[in-house]
Image (tube, rainbow, N blue to C red; front, side):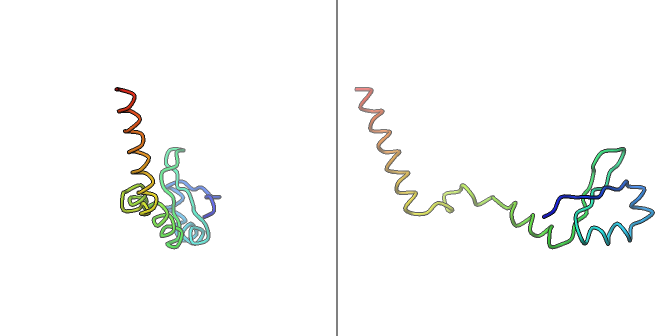
Length: 89
């Protein structure tokens, strides 16, 4: 997704909403308030792509790990635990 090339104030949005919306359909548009970025307007396809790519809740869960990797991990943990116990003897 391209970065926002255009920036408008909230006052601009009130006065030129049609033009700004038309531009936001082509690429993201930043809306500022008191010289600080506050909002980004973007088309629905870019929004959906962002939402899809940002949903990482399943990454890193046990369900996302392949069986082979899980077995290798368990073997490594068992080996580490065995070394730790041998070192304590």
